[in-house]
Image 1 (cartoon, rainbow, N blue to C red):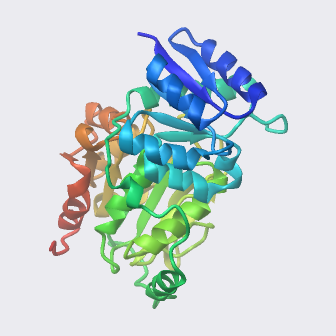
Image 2 (image 1 turned 30 degrees about the vertical axis):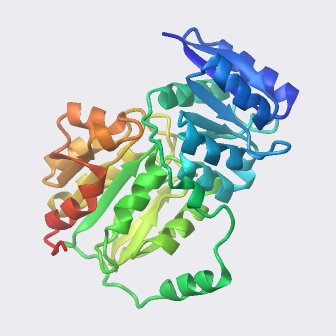
Length: 363
């Protein structure tokens, strides 16, 4: 079955280029293109596409406002394709929060990425979006599209003021390792919202370009009970802190004289990803063993499946998100098929299940 795509972009040159790249795949077809939200609305009615690619900066109505209305009235898979996905990471995170399945930057002449590599990434994201679960959410219109009032910003800042140093992770300490990809930004938020402030160290790999991971970590830090930071390498693992791998490097756990620390590696991509979930999970299997807890969340592909299997073989507790709650049931499915998943868990129960495995009281 051919995946029918509608391209929405205010640039005629970009619409033509994206359509050509899309049409290069035998299983995907660009059935139309629109320069603005009004034209897009009419074409959606007449063409009934399977997937939209959506620019952010458009005349009359920007892509974020259009996306908000679309996901409230006619939910469908959307891949954001815009320069804003690189220059405006906050805008991109907002699009994902509103229901966009994934994002990709516009092709750039100064990028090291070849046209063929870009086309493959774009096509992979469209295929994943086509198979994604998109749910109607009537409450989206009430979500703020602008920064919160200053009073709320101040209260949030106070709630996340510098905390006392947590307990350092030593031999025998429990550590949680989490991997995610497509759909993972919201899944990780939901997971961490259920994790207490005094949690064991949590190390996360979310497939995401390096221009986004710092903003993503800051966003999680304002929303979730534990402290959340983007790892810089060499941080001592402490209770109450979540470490997000930066988008430019693999992240692993290493042993030092002071206890366990983060380490960043710019070695080649694994499973086409850097950071890779497998690299993180392999380090957990090697060093932490039965004191580790592994969690694999929504995402396309197979990154993390073999690493989670090695964690389980080393005695770790391992959990995979269930199909019904995944945006894309790829990585958890591959892990389950490999025998890596001890227990399949819905997203809304994942934090409670992990806390139970850690031996912590669950409210």
